[in-house]
Image (cartoon, rainbow, N blue to C red; front, side, top):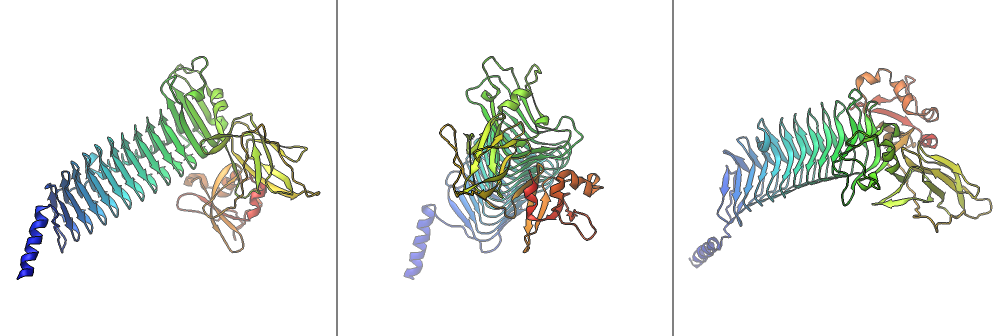
Amino acid sequence: MKCRKLLAITLAAMMAMGTMTMAFAEDSGSVSYDDYKPHEIDGNVVGTTDPAVAVSGAGTSVTVSGSVTNDNGKGVKAESYGTAKVAEDVTASTTAVYATNASNVTVGGDATSEGSDTGSNACAVYAYYGSTVTVEGDATRTGDNGSAVVAGTQSTVTVQGDATVEGKNGYAVYADNGTATVYGNATADSDYSYAVYANNSTVTVEGDVSASGTRGYGVVASGSTVTVNGDVTGSNDQGQAVSATNSNIFIGGDVITDYTDWDDGYGVEITVSGDSQEEPYTVIVEGDIATGDDYSNLRVNLGGTLDEGTELSDLVEIAVGSVNPDKVVAYDSEYNDLTETLLASIRYIVSVDEESAAVNYTGTEEFYDYDTAYSGNKIIVSSGKKGYKIDDLTAGQYATVTKNKNGTWTVLVNDGGNLVLCATLVKNSDGTVTVVDTSATTRTKTTTAKYTVGSKVYMNGGAWILVGIDDEGIWTLRSLRAFKEAELTDREAVLESMLTVAELADVLTTEAGGHVQEIDDGGHIVIRCERGILTASL
């Protein structure tokens, strides 16, 4: 009897202090809390009304140990400082997670929106007005006119997996005065959709950004900072990879768009609305800007005109791995051609091929974390291994390489960049090593590396992905570019256009006598070759 009285007193005290836990041993129907107390649900919530879980008010919280599903509306709705935690997935017929007015939601699994609703009722995650949402899995929207991630008005959304929209007129990531971080890929795979749209926001995607379908856009940014650590791919059908207005763009991979029948298409389009500002915007593409035949790889639009004494680099600083200089254009508001000015202002990123021997180089300028050089600059390259000198050096498809009498090599930077240094060494006959005087140069770097599965391989200026290495050292490469079926009627001719004669000689033939092993489901060419193919590359 004393024990029962003690238990009753304890429960009463817990209720009085607002620490009572509401527990459900079986699946619960829709629940709603606005009593400024914490609550726990042991199991799943299967919604019977809209929303399945509602929480509102400072101090009001709910923790669900299972999943939340709702075929009748939203999954989790948090408002006015409310907090919700769901251990597993949240799936809903409208918006899976809806958070407004400084609320906080954490989902331990995936957030998925499926259905025919539109706008704020068609999102995997919708966060506005100072709210915070974390999804530890993927955020996926299936259906037209919806979004995987919406981060608006001082809200923060973090997705540990991928953000994907599968439907027309959708957004994988939509940020409006908010912050969104996706640790996987951001993908929009239907017509008239955006993989990343940012307005006065900060968006980071650790993986790749890609858009497909008619007029699919990879990254569209205005007044924002967008960072993509992988590749950015625009639609091959009237789409665009990157469009940036008064924004900072950082891309760690390549920019790819292959459509060839639309004269107004661009790989990277940069618009600077004014003719002066305190600090220049920054656009960095670490890899290649590769587009279809009728595309401009890089275009800069200037909203004003260049004042006397003002350089284009005072407005926007651009650094790229490589870009076709014949497909670079720039104009001001009076349609004055600034293309030559733009070419002179581009910084080209210098790197060392993963297959290269160790080298030192000088004559570059550090920009962010990159070594860069302008067209017309000279880079002096020497051996990075004591007792050895450079026997041969290549530096991409655009640079001019000259061997010096003192054993060093000079790389003259030309428009286009592609400054990938690849050296072979030979031992000095007298055992000495050539040393470069670096007293008047800006930086020296020594780099060694080797290719691994997943590495990018550049041949004849084109990019391939190393997808396999067998026990005999034979490489399997897949073209980074995806081809349309109509382009592959003569696949051998296509391959010959992508490689030099020397490179093609190292590609293994099939039993049928051709060089192309297969065309994968995505339209990529697959070949097998000897590792020595790189000695004739670049």
